[in-house]
Length: 596
Image: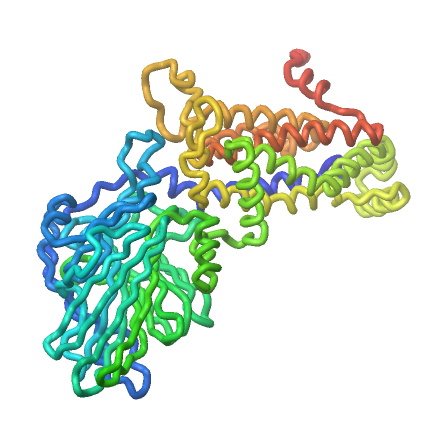
């Protein structure tokens, strides 16, 4: 077996994995451009839409209510001004509730800006239905023959109390139908992104009435930047015992998904950093659906309808929904799961397959961030902790490499002795490994086991909003975005922009240099193919990682630096020669001219 064979097999495998990662995950992001929002078709009206069949004994029609909408040609300011509203003002939210339908269709996130510039506009989450960017959440009821008209999209609510929705002042709305049934809606909000909507139905008629609560999150457009496979964007929900359900926009465009009856859970639409979800009454069973409609205004919709409620004469029934509309902050999402007993609400954040690594890693980084106030520093310290955890494995890896070097002369003797007899050579090498107590694959496993850690860290940096617009030092103002500098315009000294694929910034170059140095810690392999991989891999990785988030590139460069130091110490302890300086000299040593 040739020197360092298994080490280079592991490296080659890593290259294959990262190339696949680049092709399937990163290329869509590299090629993504801001798409201009196409002019929307006139909204011809939302016809009543069927949902899943009723449970036995129900008298509800099985239809979610429709609404006649104005054409979606107004700008946002005009649309907000065109309907009666009650303002929303909290530390985290600003906007208003549309009293027509009691819709949440005007909501901005005060703590988040569109760019790293604090003077840039704040994030707009919800917009009215008669705008091209319509996105809203609506709660209401499905009527029956006994209920009379019930609150729905076109209901004109009356403001009974509270001129502004704040953390300390809920608002109360009311609607009385033609039969004298009184609907009272109390809306409260916390200091973050959770709205509590409590409906009271007072039956002042002489007969029992039946109706069913419903809720929907409706959105006209997909996110402007296409999603990549590393993160889920689209429809999401935890539906009773069925658990987590995720559906992409593309899948729902092809076919709507009607989910089975469930009790408990939540559903909605999620973006990379933001989400809008409804938590139905947890004691009532409900059916839900993820749909895309093309009648009139094209739209995506996540909706549910609960089982029918019966309100006896002279009685009052209450129904409570929760609406989350805001930023997917990890501690806050976890807090809501515990505070409101929302089943697995933490899955609103896409932690990925390596959940058991990804989330603890985030909490470790968040701990360091809260102590030092810089997520870049938190990444560096987290890397040290990870290296400490993997130190026993790394020690075995480098010890195995040192032992392989130590027995190299004996291996050369075996090659000379057995010549082309590959079977005899293989048997002799295995005997040598046994006598010297060497495990030839010991150097591979530490590398392979660290790949999930790398992916988990990538998820943390790419997915969590805490990394969004988080600065490091110097020119890195957003650890979740690629290094903005480029070698090809001398890092901004030359007055022109370079193509995206040539954005090879300072940190990718630092990472490439540290990777080159790390590979020079080992002898150059005699096999030409392995030597070629050995020489080209740092350059390939430099170009590939240039498009990755800067935080991940900083992690890789720092991890390489620690690995070089660690390898030098361990190999020195085992008496193995450190090849770094000799290999660097050989790179720059002039080769003798061939004899003529």
